[in-house]
Length: 427
Image 1 (cartoon, rainbow, N blue to C red):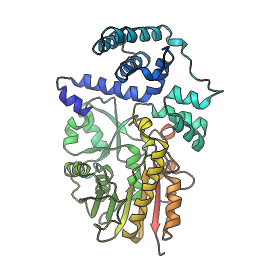
Image 2 (cartoon, rainbow, N blue to C red; image 1 turned 60 degrees about the vertical axis):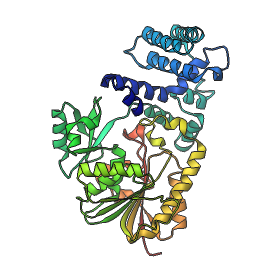
Image 3 (cartoon, helix red, strand yellow; image 1 turned 90 degrees about the vertical axis):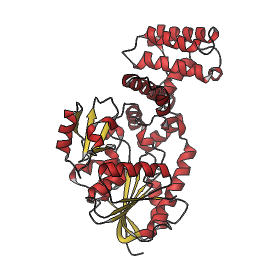
Image 4 (cartoon, helix red, strand yellow; image 1 turned 180 degrees about the vertical axis):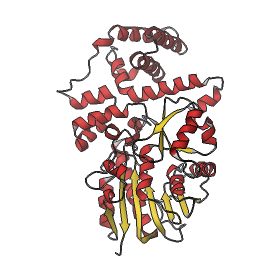
């Protein structure tokens, strides 16, 4: 979409926001939209060509989920788009389907919730059946339904106060002077929720001055669990764009060292840019694949290690709705295998008595609890800590009975995350 916007430089900010809303909305509700189309045609659904199907999806999303777009406008625009493909046949087909659906808008039937609960939840909330079955298995049908609904909500825009330069109350006042409504987050002590903000964050003066970093509340809390201290040497494995790296450096008062590893050179370049803007000069970056090697580029041990495991990202579906459709059960097995390798490779470079935090942004036992169990069996010198003993009072609600960090979108109003804390003892 960013590439498309660069090519269409004439688009106003409002038009860009509308486009993003349409694309994200269709991705969220694609299965329900397809169900409507499938039940309105008299031939196999698969015969509808993708460009035509997308025209129908966009129109139906506006009709069913956007109050400000009149039905007639959505239909007429869809017909115009169809004419650009094959004027006569396609335009007539699109017009007929959409007008028929509009006439029967309130009479659409979904799978019976009692006879086929999985089918109903899958179609009504627009999720693949394998994922619905998985969550029902792991957290129960009622909780699964609430989580499906939460995953379809528009995500909150949360930023992290850069306490090296400003405190949270002062940042909120600064944002308000720029015309941005802001308030403290419920859990993260440095988090600020931007409400009703539509423009690009990086255009704000306060962003350019390095007063904050965009970072979800769950991600902010996860860094707090490791409790970085000034003067420590910390290894950030799978650092990505560096949200957690810069947060740790910030909590360290820019004293000590954060070594950020990632296999993607371009992500580390973005990390360096963020670090410069935020004033966290104690971050060093190394391009490395932590899963395929035993970290030979690391010549000494660390006080703490953060393993931000590559995962299925099923806890961030509201933010990345395409995760529903690009992930599969095979991916979960592959990723859990990868996570195990990364954790095992990190153990040799952790000091005795040092702490290692394993974090994912997914809701999946195979990538979370089962990885932890396997890791402990293979590494007898590592012990599992109960995070209730390490978090401040504000975070106790986010720690479940086994001592894991497990916020849920439908319960805590943030991304679904998982965190486990280990200590290295004498083996």
